[in-house]
Image 1 (cartoon, one colour):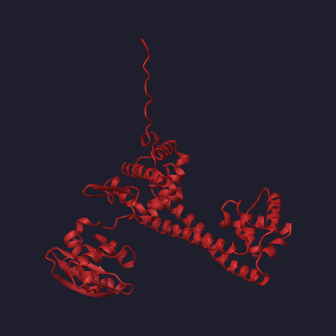
Image 2 (cartoon, helix red, strand yellow; image 1 turned 30 degrees about the vertical axis):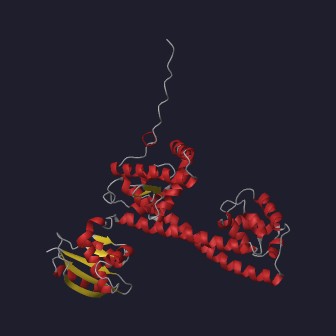
Image 3 (cartoon, rainbow, N blue to C red; image 1 turned 60 degrees about the vertical axis):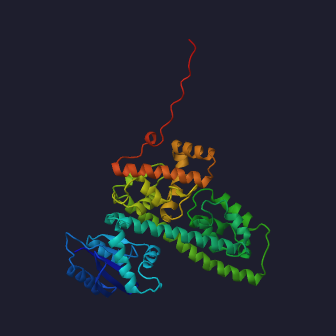
Length: 413
């Protein structure tokens, strides 16, 4: 008898339901979120026919957490059902819109019973690929935190210290660079910045890692910080300087986290056998390659073809047709992390590949805007990546972007 399991996930407990091929409830339970609850779940599955040869599939509304990790370790198929999709299925079982944890568990089990083919199991990625995913996603989150902290600090500085923003604008990295942060820590207000001696500026530059042109840069910063600017009242300016130091500590922590996680992600990624193929593509360094691998994984059976991968990445457009009307638009439902990495990849490939640049220019000549042309280029490149990973070959510019033969001019006899 075929059995299907649905688990309604919660933070401290989980409701589960087992249904047979006819949709009849054969077992239900509420388990705790600990090792005892896991043992109770596995025992209940074993009582209803779960063996090494015939694992009972499980549907759950999340793809993360210890429970999911332990269930994946047993080798059974795990279906991560989108909560929005599960809510639509719930209306098939009740018209009064009632909701309970037990009902949700039954709905998830019945999704597998009736529409398992319409959903995908969690990919069987290797342990190394999963570790790359953890580090790459954490580093991407740290970069986004760094951007938010930098924007908040920049907005605050505009209110009382615009001269500092003008002074650090030419510095590579801007407000997030070590030099800009060290300078702001030494002089958080216009009054302190105007009194900074040249010797202290040179010390700040050396502490930030500057090795050449120290004297010229100190002279430039001294002149920029002493240039006339609008000022707040002295006490207000001092109070805003204290707030700046608080915001600066948050930015320092975000920058440090992003740098450390980037180093760890690159080190782990370069140990993966797919890293050589991924980094052979133009515009893909180790860090961006780690983000790409983190989202697509190394389970080659996850995507049936290149079109499925393109749709998952948001590179392929969506066609909406009804009657005589038809529209082709950009895909909104996608893996946002993979799409963000794809934009960086496509933009960097413009200067690293002549074929990618020519493809981008052709799309622009046909009327595409910058973002649309980059998305189309990413669509082309990720299709090539799918082919290279499946066939275990490195990127070849001639195959990816074949040049059109020049027309042969007819000569007069």
